[in-house]
Image: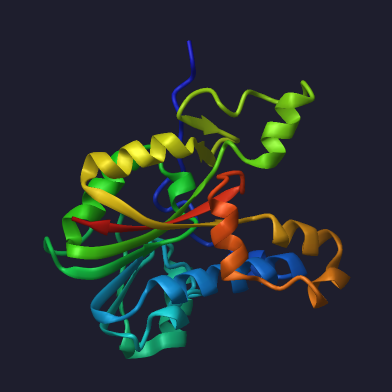
Length: 243
């Protein structure tokens, strides 16, 4: 019998130094690529909310583009850092993705990056996001792709688990991998239609190990878009629209 998948507590980042996670050449590469994807996908409008906003790393991609910007972040210390950065130009909320303090059909866009891989109830989260999105509104999020090239190679060599089996898998006690086809079914089931996808999590590993390559290897939206078609990148970004 398979053990149930377990996620992270909604206050799991309380007190953590998440800014420190983004130090180093590899993390800088990943940060630049994720910002490029989000900048491209969020085009502006009336209202946007970022779920799991952390210390506001991605805020520069949407603050000023939308007439009203909201950040949902359960961790008090991270929310306070974001508030010092963006001030009164953003509304800040302590809430869970499963119970968002907003009315239905309210937002033009919802952003949720590096959160989905901690959720043990992904369908419930997507239903709540669908509820707060306006018809035609955009969701931008990413998930940890359990069918990534490194896990496929490990399986082929007989040193790793089968990445093609199952829908969700705990990599450790708080990190969950998802099968791309499963995520597709979840999105379709709640009424969200995939518009674009981008792959991430490969270039940053290369630059992280060989920082000198950072001079030549730059984050590219075009490469990320092409990579997503194979669905072998560790991180798959999805741009979806509410019908």
